[in-house]
Length: 375
Image (tube, rainbow, N blue to C red):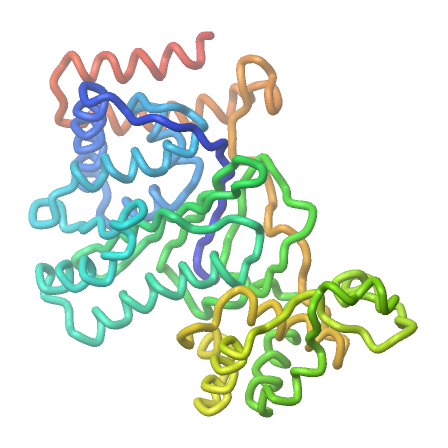
């Protein structure tokens, strides 16, 4: 089995959790975390938070909005405040915006605290960077990452909860990673992908259907990118020259009247990145996308050219498998499945029963859960 990678779509909502609520969210999150660690271990805690169903349920039971984009950032923030690395053996690194860019430094701090080897720390930093690179560049679904939380245990296991924003449809998409059984980051790294909104077209270079495209992309790069320039042209003259754009026939094989060009233009600076990558001669696709400057545009260009020259069509299907919600009492996006809902509630209720919470907070949390199913 490869790594677990799951996705959730959430509408963008503004505003912040009030201090009185966030204070209680932290307290309840600490109780749930301590219960899981007492009943199971840190590995099970990572499995739970890397499951979008459980994470979504957690955000509901601690009292936050059930479906907004703030669910991710606020719940991760509550975990970061609630979890004490020295006491619980788990370190929550990164966060939203500027905090996400401090993830490597946070990981180094966690490594020192947990006495991890320097090689292990380097691997953790790489895992953080490559998971972000893949969700931002190899899966081009229109969502730009702005939140990246990286959870580390004292044994060096890890999980990622990161979120991207789509300015056009005003939705956010959440990605979950779990380190267990990771073999290849770039080949079907997800166990399941969950969301309510499916994009009509998304380049997915991690799909099994993209395997040949990944291989040819590396071959094209290692064979000197200078000869690729002829496949690029400014967008402006395309219609006047009656040329068929490459992205008009990538899904269906049909011969164009004229030599096709890509509906994109790589600058001289971007070709320098390809040139530098060529000089390094990456041995595989994972090494190639890890190179500095190898972003979405260049990854997409190599995929399109590999299709054009060799017919290795990459996957254009949005990597979504099923919806993440239990449904809604108003029937949107569909009526509540009571059996599934009861199972989620019982799982959390069992955890809360043993949590070290003040009686009032514990009582209110359980009453919220019972009220949900009785509505």
